[in-house]
Image (cartoon, rainbow, N blue to C red; front, side, top):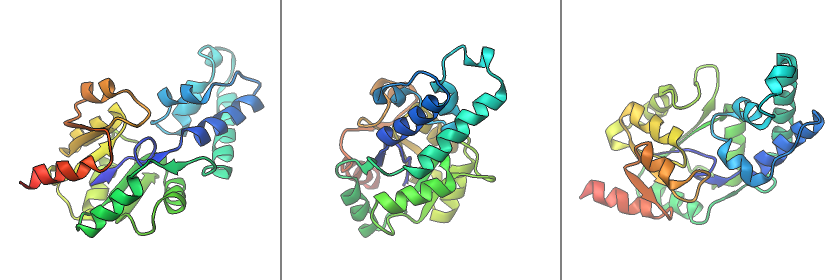
Length: 219
């Protein structure tokens, strides 16, 4: 089983939004309410910075300005990545159950690898996962399937035997790209309709419903 991180295992939106607003304020640009960031996150911090600036910003600002906003965002988020971030209800208990039942578990996020590892270590029970992977030189952003294939090799799992659990169309497309079973969560940052339209085979409203999917697959 491979999980997305933001909006799936952890509610990170307050800390991401605060970091982005810090960078925007430093540049003298308008800020956004926290809830607005639900539609901007998921593709990595660079894409978040591009989405958060005014739509005409690129017309009057050079790449150097955009680079500066991105760098300010990264600095602010790295310094305050786990202030309000917390697991969704039932997630820690689910991970413990899955491990006890012999499931191989991984995380794949579009955040930078070092940041993903640190956030997982701070927010989730130790040794919950066999592999934690973020974006790096050899791991491009989802929906590129490279990261999933790498995690599957570590887990020793075949795609058709794997649930890929996430909260966005991006995650569903990533699952389908490798032949894994796409499972959407209703509690994340994106509407359920987006998950269905992107090909989610299952939509769950509670983390423990994953056990029901596993039982149906094993029956």
